Image 1 (cartoon, rainbow, N blue to C red):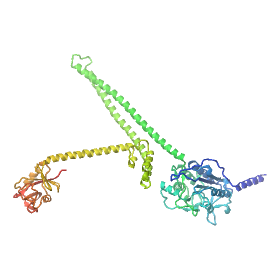
Image 2: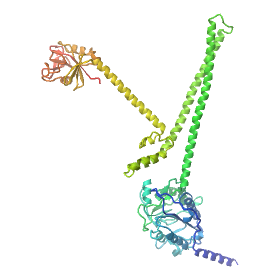
Image 3: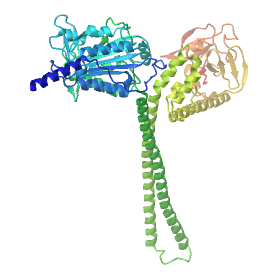
Image 4: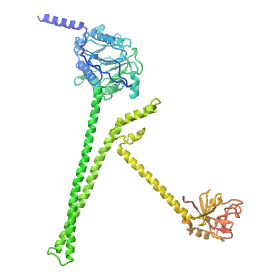
Length: 620
């Protein structure tokens, strides 16, 4: 009897293995996401998952079915996949016939605009003769290589002329999966909006595997293998609207190599017709993006409510403090009135019995105590108010910083639009789109195209505007002072009396040389030794003072051969032929000769035909 039951069971399993599996379709509205280029995606998003634990002859696996279902669930829940385009095979359903049958089903159903993700979790093995990896269907024997599904057979179905989908991503959590593809080497390129748009436009045939040409672990975390755990976790944690394999793979790899002795790989499926650089895009469902935005909005609302509460509390606290201070001020005022009344009585016959020195002292002490309390209250109020204002300001700055960070990517998009020769005509519309992303009031008084101002909060803009106003005011004040100072200096010079091409003479005796910017005064027109010339210059206060003895170089600038009687401007009136310079060495000093235009030394106390001149630089 027992033997008969066993035969029936085995026959039932065999019949099951021979019947092709057709997934039950649950009618649902197909999700049409928006592509990275901004257009609605025309094709469908297909998902084919395979998970096998209960092999007939191979060792039972612990997590393969859970892995396949976990990947299915996260893609259906968070990404733009639906039940109408789902194919799934688990355990006894995952026969060779059914797996290949479903690949043929996909070849007949998919269109050139579709995308397909294939996930396999189960045994993989290496053919000892061909050295090629294979998937192991549920009914395959350990020695029956012909019943296995080779990587070569799988790739043949994934060719662009078989399954015609534009994008296919194969994910294999099995042993010996590394010969599926040509692995990607080197640093992965940066994932940007422009790159996502570019890779989505090209056909792709890519694969991510849990390892290379070696066995991989079936153990992991919870009910999943290490590879599938980090794959699902990355898909769950992702908040980007567009996720591509080159962005997905590094995060999965990092988790796996940290926790298992295997090295995930990714790359293109060789010989299947994919274009270099092409990648599938996994579209995050709009409701998840909305949930994220809702969460961010809720966080900002909490911050705003906290800020508003702090501001309300600050106003209430200030009101309480003002009331308390006013009460003490009233008490001090009443004491002042009492003291004043006592003072009046003391100076008249109406002195009362309680107007004693003790009463006076008590009243004075009471006033001192009340005044001290009042001062403490005022100081405490200043400290508390400063503390409250600092907390409010810190919260405002944190809020403004978060808003500025949120706006930065939008500002960069606007910048890319207006810098393109094709976007110049859209400048105003792009600016309005950027303003729409801002919180109310954030973009008020910001000029079109002023991106640096857009990233500043209204408070920061007010501070900068006030700083600029003060700086401009300081410049105006400085200019006004300079004008006033120049006017004063001009008044010190006196009225202009005459001028020629280079020199201007003033009523004070000052002569200005426009070429050099030097002002001159001729000393007394009499023979002068060097020391007397020096004392005269030091005591000269004409036109505001600041005079000194000239250098020989400065004296040479006066020499103009043939001009006047002494080869220099006649405005500097002198009958001498030599002018002392400020340079002296021992008992000799340097002089400039107006007859020859040369410089020579002369004994300092020799005065014949020697004169002293004073010089200074013009003061404006």
